[in-house]
Amino acid sequence: MRGRAPRGVSNTRGGRTPSYRSSGVRKSNKYTTLELIEDLFSEIQKLSEKLAIIFPERLDGYKLTFLSRLWGFSDSYIAMLLYRFRKNPNKKIADEKLDQLEKIIKEKYGEKASECQKIINNHRSSELALPDFIGLLCIELGHISGDIELTYTEGSEILGFLVDDIVMRITNDNKEWYNPDYKFSFEKIDDMISNLDILFREEAENCFKLIKKYKDLNPDLKEYSLESYNVKNPHYFKEILSGQILKAYLFGFMCADGYIIKKSTSIGLELNVKDKAVLYKFANAIELDLDKCKIAERAIRHIYKGEPNIYYQARLRFGCKPMKSDLINIEFSSSKADRKNIPQPIKDLIEQAKLEDPELWFKTKAGLTALAWLLGFYDGDGSYMGQSGWNSGIIYSANEQFLREIKELFEIKHDVKTKTEPGSVVSVFDKYCLSKGYYYLGLDKELFIRMLNSYKGSLERKRPPQEGGRNANNLHNNKKYKIAYFTYLS
Image (tube, rainbow, N blue to C red; front, side):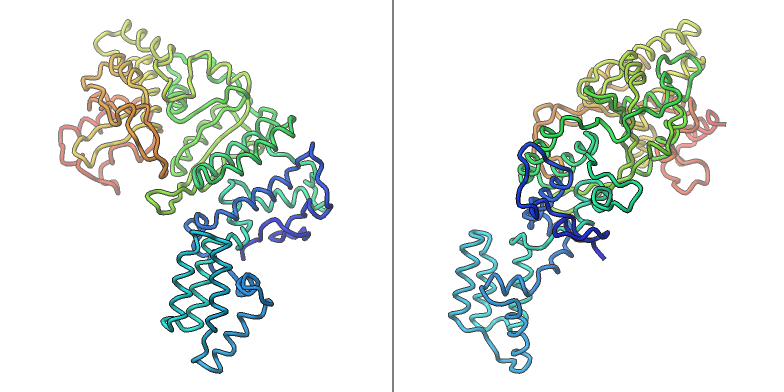
């Protein structure tokens, strides 16, 4: 059973939130979390056409009473018409009443009412029997009216958090975690803005204004949900030394899928839920208390080519000021487009390896550590191309210079190539924008094998399939490559 939207006065789970409007007055200098939730639900509910695409089943929620009231009659009017039809299957609504309904719908919904007018005309010309007429009209009004309440379930998927849990925390004084002054963190607000933008684009403008108002009137908001860092090893990334394979791998993954928030102490990693194991490796390495800072999973809905899609994401986000400072000091950059250079510690490792053994630098401890960094980056922003016959890996970046540095440092024979030209118009979740450019670099097969061998705990799905594995593919047709690969991994 789906929970209902924030309206009314009930405090029960799945019920309705208290309305500030019941007091008759809202203080202009105060805007509570409950008020924001209620106002957001009200605005999102108006976006009925988009909601019908995302949640097609919600159209069943347009009730006969809604149509009765719209028409100007009592709640039971449509039910009575259908009852009379069952008694007399030739029953048809009088033309003057259809004219009245057509006028009301046209005045209220304007251009959106065109399909409703067709349905009315089809009943007028006896092409639609009364029950079919009512059914189709309710579905269409469900599309355009905004009268179907947004449920807690729908709202939670859209906003990215369990709305009913927050409402209960604010309103239910019987719970130990009761907090009538609960406020969102900037972390949660960022999620809301991102989700609303992906799903509704410019149609969510009023929602963005409400969120801005909330931030302006609540200057004491925390940066993240648990504003005290729970990291026992906060200086894990202070330096990357020869032999620190796991650390180099995780730093490479950070360079692909990690970020730091400039105006806070927040650090985060976001990736496909199927790769969640990396987040556990990361949390264990830095000794993060996962009881206080959990690895979150969420479903991100978006519209792609006019169709609703869903992407499942796993995320680890925490605050740690000393770790953020250390990451900046070793030249970590959150912006993929602005990441022009390989971090200096990785360059130093390669230099050290080549001083030890110019020919076989990749077999030295320093060389393997640098290759582990490349492997982490590949797991985050790369793909295995076994089924294409390439039988190697490709890495991607929004910055051409960054890939050119990788090519030079790791002595890669292939050239950096352009996947998307800068200035090209591209579609991102059905929104057209100008690309800053996107580039890729194919890894030499020998380097690819060495890289994979540097750390055996990397993502299995981005490795060539092992002998007898369930994902056997073209690699097994390349005897020389197969022997080399399994020799390096043995």
